[in-house]
Image (cartoon, rainbow, N blue to C red; front, side):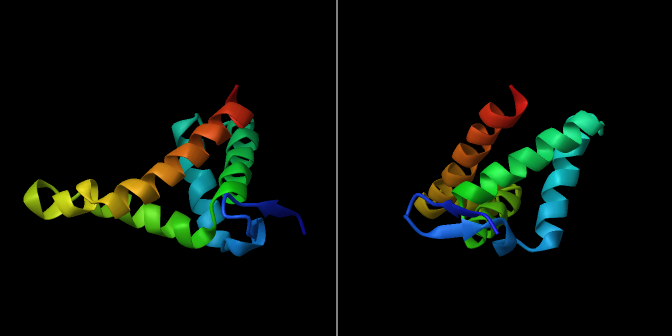
Amino acid sequence: MVHFPTASGASTTRADYPTTAIADYVFACMATNGNTSTALKQCSCSFDVVASIIPYDRYVEASTWLSMGQVTGEKGSIFRDSAESKAAIGDLRRAQAEAEIRCFE
């Protein structure tokens, strides 16, 4: 099993993510990138990079903030504007940006 260091110094592995989370990430990425065999390779790589940077719990937290931020109006503003949401989403976005550099260029 491959262990990846995280920003906090802890070790995370791909096995820390459930298979359904991996599949959801890769399928969504592939749909965005043309559903080709190249997209499969790039999206699998992208997931591996993201999983190496942020632990699963933080990934779920950021995904939840993003999902709840889709609520319109004042009710959704807490999900978009809180310091907690911005920090979690920022962590995910930075991991995705690193994955973009490593896997898609």
